[in-house]
Length: 177
Image 1 (cartoon, helix red, strand yellow):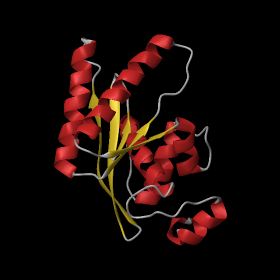
Image 2 (spheres, rainbow, N blue to C red):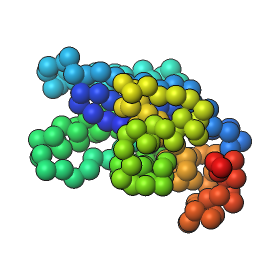
Image 3 (cartoon, rainbow, N blue to C red):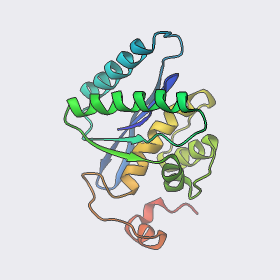
C-alpha cells in the first residue's frame, strides 16, 4: 500500500505483487479540503487508512516522507498527516517504509525531478492503467507503493538492485521498448 500524505488530498494506491506480476487493486484520493477543523482532518486520515487496510489487507505501507520546504506551517501540517497515516498502519501491524519524493520519482521515471504528469504516464505504461488529471494524488500513492516494490523491500523480493543494469536483469518485463 502506498500513501501520498496531504492535508487537502491524501492519495493512496494498493498493489498486489505475485510472482513478479503487478496488479493495481485500488487507487484513489481522500478529499480533506472541505473539513475545516485540523483535528477532524487528522481523524479522517486515520479512519480512512484503517478502512483501506481492513478492506484490502496489505502487508506493508510505503509513504512519501515530508520534503523540506520554505513554508514551516505547511511542513508541520504535512508531518502530522504522515504521522497519523503511519500510526494507523502501525495499529494494524504493517511494516512501514518512507521514501523521499525525489526517490519515488526517480524509481518510477528515472528522473527525480519528474512532474506528477510524467509519473502518472509512466505508471500507466507499467501497470496498464490510465490516471485522469484530477486523480494525480492517487497516482502519487501508487507511485510510493511501486517505488517500494522496485527497491526490493516487499515481502515477495529480498534482492536489492544496486544499479539499472541489475534491475533490468532481475526485472526484464519492466523494459519498455
